[in-house]
Image (cartoon, rainbow, N blue to C red; front, top):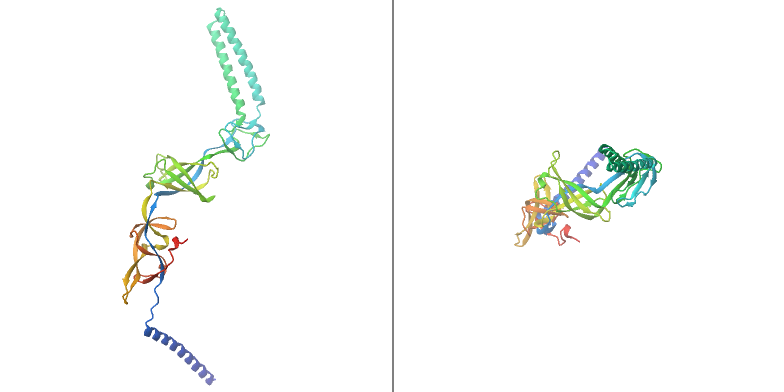
Length: 366
């Protein structure tokens, strides 16, 4: 038993000796040959000037220029329906008819009274010319005729309201009534929307309202058409800032001839302000974002020990602005044509030598 333990112990010592010997040999070899890892390879780019249009960004909703749910003012039973769901209606097109039998009969009675009142007035006028009727009799006859005329006009309006027509041109929605259905006053008949022109309502914070005025162009995108952009013009601005939100409400008008947009859609809004202006831009990949501020690595040159020129990097704090299409506006810290690292910053530290890749910066590759 003791002999076996001794053999295992000897074998273990030999194994550890071999491992430590190999490691010490590697360390000694590295010291002897002064091994230095190669400089990391990075992608590089230059700061460039671009013309950017000043903008304000917001979100909004589309609203029909004219949109209602057609309803009845008077009660009645539906006796005729003149449209189908989804039809295009012109202003004045009949939509439904309500039973007006009793109303028309009343109209005939009132017209008879109107004719009688006219006859009575004519008789009173003839008698008055011959002094057979007093002035008061003539006035009574005149008043009775005017009352009869008013009663006829009122009943004609009631009969007309039993025929419900489209108040303006537009697209009809889904029908809400059926033939023979009794409709109380204010019943929903069918939605009607004018889609040829839409309003876009959106808001801006009060600190962004300076310089905004009617006539400015807005561009919008909606989820239904992610690859399409729609344009409109600001046509109205509220005269006051909303008290609760401290936002200013604006309205733009958009042409919608193809009816691609619909009321109620959510829209991402870009408001164009003034003329384009020059800005310094760099790829978004070049910026290192930290809680202490944004930085980039500037690429510079120096002489190495052999007297040859080499590239090295230095960290540079910057101030950034807007981001567009994977490029970032630089408002401070850089100037045009500055050479900087656009990819590979993870392996960099201050003053380290680098190799420049022949590949273009990632956002400039085809």
